[in-house]
Length: 632
Image 1 (cartoon, rainbow, N blue to C red):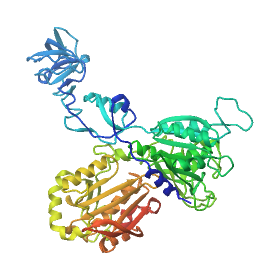
Image 2 (cartoon, helix red, strand yellow; image 1 turned 135 degrees about the vertical axis):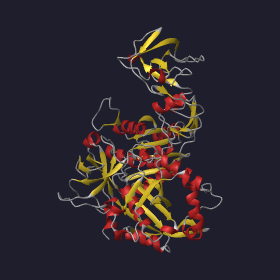
Image 3 (cartoon, rainbow, N blue to C red; image 1 turned 30 degrees about the vertical axis):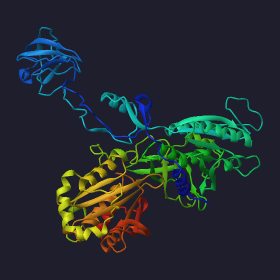
């Protein structure tokens, strides 16, 4: 029997991102960019009027007021798109439309509402400052700047930007074409006549909508009877237009179920029992290099299997970075008995907020196999990993996947959190000496700061690395020289890390001690799904070694990641078994050693073993990891 994680890995393994296509803008809507889009022009191309009014020299109306208007001669009128060379003379004004080029000599625009709207002469009743009501050249976009990074989803806003910089075509990952085939003699269309024993085909319609919601292009086939020839012919016919095939039904061991018999000679398809509830037997494989996924016929089981396994596949094919729905940890209002050694999916309603935490309330009786109420009322799915006693006093924590969200979650905003310049950008994080007791640090600095890596850090980075190379080199992961990911300089490292941060895949921190660059902490390998997980790596310069700085820095990062700011569920740190200082840091913070990963990293030309330390949000101390240091 496969675990949920093993089956998901098998599904993702056979699906690769679609080859990029060069398409016109209208065909790019809903797709994911397969290239960085760099602006060729400035926007605006020249200084423009920000509203309708009069272009003036700000100095000419500096003393204007309602009781003391400034009178100017109106010498010309400039309309939007009028590129005639126009110059403002002293003591004059030029009538101007919103979006029209600003005349030479003018540095501000007086709104219509602050004048008498004169045509030959105008009285200005309010002063303006230089630059007021003016859109400066390149204020929106500067030539040579990447305006849309690879991996961005194209919607109306992105189309406006692309058209604005003159792009007519872009390279995108096309939406996968998905064919849905419902199997069963008993299935009829919802608008057809129903006889005794007939069942309306709910799965075909529901899965087609789910595919569209996931960003795919759905093609629904009318229900196919349980006949070997009919099903085989339908599958072979649909291969022409399918990037992905989905079948639903026909997976039981009862007489007349034909999916296994048909698919075995057509391709390489494996059928396994998956340790999940509801749902059990699922199929995954390929037919003529086309991925095919076989789902059960029960509507609830089919929907859960789609959400868990197929939706991530479709998003991977479409080029998305975040494959899974947003999910948050929540506390159950009451417990129940979960089936042993299975991952159970239960419909719940979530309430709460990132600051207060979330509470999950089941919307249907856990363990119900077919519950139509689930399909209409569910807002999220909880996934307990271990059996819980059915007791009103139970206060266990589960991971909830958000099917519908009426409130923002920390995970929803992770991409924006990591984007430089964003309002909720999570840097810098500063902890002063008041945040931890003297016992927390051996000889504590006054302030430890985590902030973004900057190009200006290069000189300090080089000084530290040159001085500490002999000490640091044996402990740091390196890549083979012929690796395409090998980095040759600090600028390469900073560029790559910040690009990953913009995509929501990494969080590169520079470490400062009392304002001086002291090392780096990198959060990477951010994964999604039932376990929102990240890996942490770090190094620190010799002047600060042994002073507890890195212990404090890692504690800050853990609080940052597992707390309300980012809200990940799990954090890992990999340490070489011979690195006594790093082992001590992990143990002091209370991280759990999970064993040795063989040949994890390439160190000094050799693959080296590493001990993996991990912590999950449920095990985080009540006062945070920094608070734990203060209590030691």
